[in-house]
Every structure is written in structure tokens, then in C-alpha cells.
Length: 437
Figure 1 (cartoon, rainbow, N blue to C red):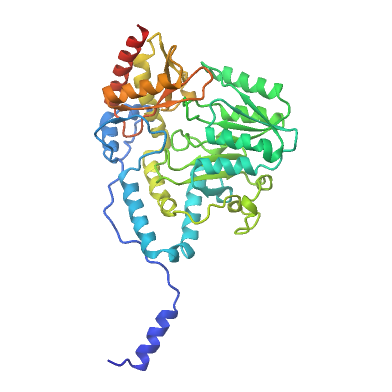
Figure 2 (cartoon, rainbow, N blue to C red):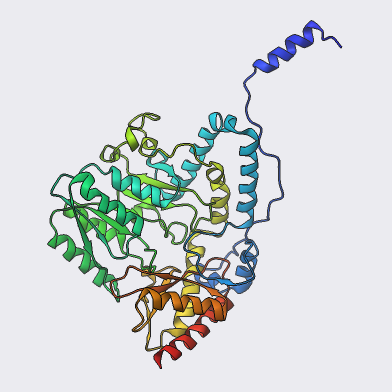
């Protein structure tokens, strides 16, 4: 068969036209969370098991055990999981054409969504592969340190961030100071401890500060600590990996210039997503990542260089933020605190069971750790977590770090039921009784 001249010209013209990767083919999408009823306060809704049963049906979780170790990362709800699978398939089909054409604009849309929710500008947000990379880039890149200066962190800060602070000893020639968060903690005790530590260590120029730490779940009064640090000429890098999507706040509530966040914890984005924040005007105080030349020096993206990464999680951020917005940050916060209160209030009368977060709602979310008095070793707490799983099919995790001894961390999630945490309370009463004898 021969082609006419007109057909050949038309075909060549089509080949010359710019190609834009087509959107991925539609796939079945779960309906999303139930509508939040009008006229109900977040605290009222937190106790509505019917509503939260409908939310729980948006998650695919194993029926073989009760998962109370949701602090590692957050299970994706079904609309997010299906969107992620769609994005993985699309990336695999379109390949580098996607990465070299539309991805940049899509990534900027994600940055804008994040910035809007956090109350900042897109130019203050750079995407990373997680909260760890965000904190490492900020800590390692902080360039206002001089030999003889000091940096400081606490016993409850995230271990990978502490390691990065330790690395500054050789990298910048600084001293590394360590302080202890009071236990038991109160708001005033925490503020007094930070004030004393800053006063007694006048050479400190950089402070790592966990909004919600990953060991006990204690939430610190970040804004007040940032203010006292600033008065002494100390910059603060806030670790908000566990709090964003868990607690209801914006960046303005911190008053800090630097912060690292995770997207694959309480926002339910697929594993491998996070971001860092650098306040406008403070970009020169963070080094370019490995002398990056991909972006201009005045672009925050030059402070992160991850190489070729899996962009499917980034492309799924919008679906996760849609799910978050449908429930609302205040509603999620109230439910997560309710689940913590539900089990803690059933066991706090036990004389030998120590709850490592205070009863001040401003100082906890859903992460809470416990310790059986006198059982403070790693082996003791591994054994308690093992007993909870082997005898009760409850999955928790032992955590180390607090100077008063190891503990077991309990982390419910949005799909956790009232019955799940009641089961934990019953199991703990039995364990505490046996270990008291």
C-alpha cells in the first residue's frame, strides 16, 4: 500500500508535534472517608465509633494482629493506595519521558499544596525522601558554626538526627552537648530545663528540637523554646516528622526558621517522601547539597540532591492530602488523642506502670510509651513487647533512649478501634500485676 503525499506530510507533522505523556488510565478508586457531620465538634466526633468504623474501612490491615506500632510509617488509605499503584504503572509505562517533561510541574503542584497547608510559600519547601533526609540536609548544611561553637540535642531526639549532630564535631569543629528532657515531664519543667541548658552552655549556636519525639511521644512547647533560643543567638532545627498530619498546626505556630517533615507517617503518603522548610531569607545559612548546580543557589531545591528517585510517592501526595483535608487536622488530632486517653486512663492507677507522657493534652498526641517499674533494660522491654504479641496478638515496639530506662511504645492509628486499645489495657493490667509480684 502506498501513502499519498498529503498523508505522508500529515504523518511527519504529527511526529514533529510536542509529545505530552497521557494521564494514567482510570482505575477503581475507593470512595474516601465519610463526610464529617456538621455541628459536631472534633472532640465529640472522636468518640463516635460508627464514624471511625467507616474511616477504618478505608484501610486494608491484617486481621492477624492488632497493630499498635504505627509510628514507623502510616498505612495508606485505599484511595491513596490505588492512586499510588496507578502512578507506579504510569511511571513504568511512560518512563523517563515523564521525568523529563511533566514531573517538574507536578512536583511544584505538590510543593504548593504542602506550602498552603503549612501556611508558608512554595519557595520555602523542598521535597526529600523522608524526614531523615530533610533533617540531615539541614543539620549537615548549617553553615553558621565556627570552631569552638557548640550544638545541642536531647536524649529523646531522633537517633539519625543525633548522629548528624555528632558528625558536626569533625565537620565543623564544634562541641556536641546533650541535655535530658525531664521525666516525668510538665510544660514548666520542660521550659525550665531548656532555659537552664541554654544558660549553662553559652557556646551553643544550634539546637535540634523534636516537636513530638519518636520514643515517648512527648510534645514540646516549640514556640516558647524557639523564642528563648533566639534570645541567646541560637538557631533551632525543628523535627516535625511525627507531628505533621498528627497534630493540627502551621509553621507559624513554631516561629522557627528551619524544620524537617515526613510525608509517609501521619499523612499516609507512600514510603519515601518528606520535605524540609527553610524560611525565606535564611537560605544562605544552609549549604548547597554537594555543591549542587542543578538549581540556582537562590532556589531551595539546591539544598537537596537525591539523584534519580522513585517519583510515584511524590505524585501520590495530592491524594493523601485530599484524604487528610476530608477529615481535617483538628478531627484527626482529637481522635488520635482519644485513643491514647482510652487505654492510658484504664491503667494509670497501676502503681508499677509508668506512663511517659503527661496528662496535659498540649503535650501528647497518640504516641505514648510505658515502662514497668524496675524493668528498664532493652531485654526487659523486648520481652514485654513479645508477650503482648505472643499472648494477645498486639504489636508494639521496644524503644531505647530515655536516661531512666527503656520502654515500650504504643502507637494507634486512624483505623484503630476502641476495642483495640481496650484489649491493650486489659493485657497491661495482667502484665503489671504479674511483674509486681
